Image (cartoon, rainbow, N blue to C red):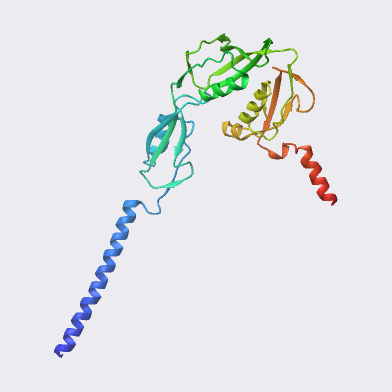
Length: 274
């Protein structure tokens, strides 16, 4: 065998061996990475909302996930200490060991200072109440020279003094003046509105919300937040109502139940005729 042929075969063998070694290293590295990162071993994040931290810990322990509380809110209608929000959301795909960031409903409500609303107009009082994180309760009317002038502020049926510390989202009832020459109002058009917007519109018209009736499409708290008004009683129209009267709201998630305003119906009919 010539020296040239020997060297050529030796170089070829070394190149081939190098290629095999590199391939083996790449394959080995890929296998190790897959093992470490659990490639193709994704886990579906469970829905932890409305659970206690202990309940959530038991649910995620089998998948070796971690829980971390990063924030808190206060929702009066929700159980204290329960999970309000999570990130990643339920149904997301994650690796084992992923941290689930939680926002829980605070055990103790945030306290705010009761403002002085006496002498305010109803609209001014409403703006002040909402800015403090409180809610408007019932509007009670008594004979007075000035309509919608705040005479008293009440909480749980008793007068509440300005400066009193009170839980956020507490309902504040207002006693308002009513002049006999300015004592009627009208039910607003609230069909198609969500609950909070409808209530604000009714209060703006010096009326109260008596009953809230959900139909069969509303099955949980989430549905109630998305439901819209499809009927109210008394209905909106030209019939005058005495300020302070009660309005009942009927809500649904079925948009087809919401009536189309008469003006829109007439426009559609005219379009069809043309």
